Image (tube, rainbow, N blue to C red; front, top):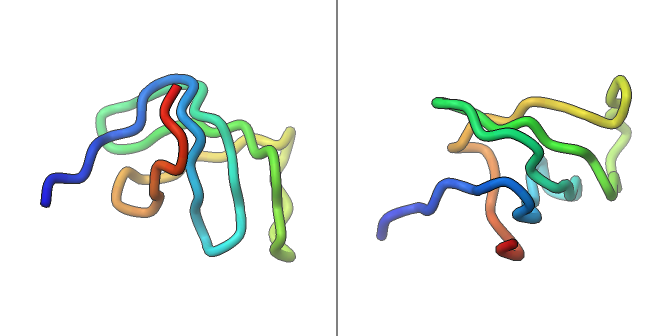
Length: 61
C-alpha cells in the first residue's frame, strides 16, 4: 500500500484527535492550520508542522 502525501487544502488527522487543513507541503512535512483539537496540546497561532509519516488524510481537497 502506497501512502498518499497530503496536498494543499486536504483535511488531515494526527495525534489521535487533532484535525487540520494543509496550508503548505514541504519535502518531509506539512504545515497545518488546526481546526479541531480534542487533546490537551496547545498550538501557537493554531498552526503546526506534521511529518508525512504522522498523519492520515481524511478528506481530499
